[in-house]
Length: 465
Image (tube, rainbow, N blue to C red; front, side, top):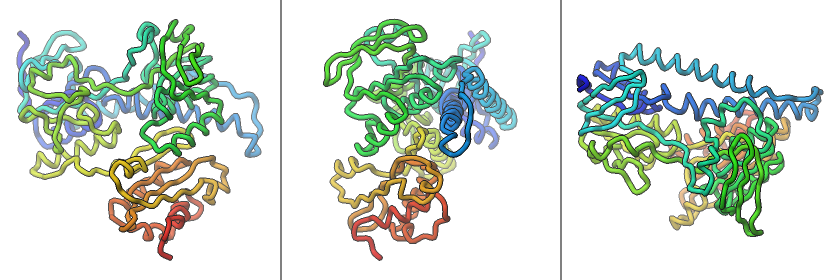
C-alpha cells in the first residue's frame, strides 16, 4: 500500500479559487497540497478564458484588416495562418503555466499531478501521472474540480467526435463550414471568431432565442449582429441526428417550425452547456452530497455536507465565471480566519466577448417580472454615444433598470465596444446604493463609452431634473 501523507489543507483541482487558496494557506505556514489531473492553474489559463480570448483577438484583427478600406487604409487580400494563430495562443499558455509553477514554488504549496479519488472522509488516493499512487489525508479539504463541456444525447453525435471548446482552440486550419450546437455565450464567441477567420458558420439553438438567459431584445440584437457578419442562426431547432465525423464531413438533421432540414458541414462544435466534474471521484466515500444536477451541495459559506470540506467555483454551483471563483476564495479565506462572509446577494457582472461585447450586471427584465418588481426601463442606442459617432465602433445599445420608488439601479446591460469596462462603473454605483441621478449627473470623460451613461440615465422616465 502507498505511504500516506498528512496535510493541513488539501485542494482537489487547481482552478482559480483553489490555487489562490492554496498559495494563501501555504504562505501562512500551513502544509498544503493541490492535486491536479492535467491543467496547471485550471481551465482558465489553459483552455477557457484566456486562450479563447487570445484567438478571438486574432479573429478581430482579421476582421479589421478586411474592413480597413472603410477607414481609409487600403490592404491586399487577407489570409489566415491558423498555425500562427494557434502558436500565439500556445505561447501565452506556456507563459501562464510558468508563472503558476513559480507561484507554487514561492508559496511552498505542493502541486501533485494525478487523478484523485476519495476512499474515505478527507482521504484521497491519487493515481500519479508519472506512475504510482499516493495516499493523502488532510485536516481540511477543498473541492475545486470544475466542469466540462456537455455533449447532448443526440443520436450519432458522440460517434462524430465533435469539437468542444478545448479542441476548437487547437485547430491548425480554418474549417470550411463549422456547425455550432448551442447558441449560448461560448457558441456565439466561437461562431463569430471562426466566421471572421473565414469559415462558413451555422449556429443551432434548441431554445426559442440565442442567449436564453438574456432579455429578448438583447438576444435579437446579438442575432442581428451575427447575421450581418454572415453567421447563420437557427433557433427553436431540435437536433435529431448527426452523421459523419467532425473534421471530415458531417451532416446534422434538425427540425424547425418550417420542417426538417439537413445541414452539411465540415466540423461540428458542441457548446451546449457544462457538466460538473463530480462523478467518479468518490465523493460518496467522502460524505459529500450532490444536488440533482450533480453539483456539490453547499451552504452560503460554501461548506459541504461533510465536516471540514468546502467547495469552490463551478463545481459548487457558483456562477460559471473566473471572477466568481475568486470571490469564493475570498469568502472561504475570510471565514477560515473567523469572518462571516457568504455568497448571499452577491452582485456578479459578466461579459461575453463577442464583437461588440455584451456585458451585464444585476437583474434582467425577466427577473423583475418573475419577482413582481416594478421598475423603469431606459435604453440608448450605441450610435447615440458620441464616441461611437466618431469611431464608428458598431451597433448595440445600453439598457438600465431603475427602481420605481427608490431610484436605485437594479440592472444594466450593454452591447457595445468596451461594455466590460462600462459595466464596472455601473456595478460600483449599484454597490454604493447610489440613486441613478448621481451617475447621470457625474462629469464623465469625453470621448468615452462611459459618457453614454449620462445620456442613457437621462432617458429614465420621470427623472429628476
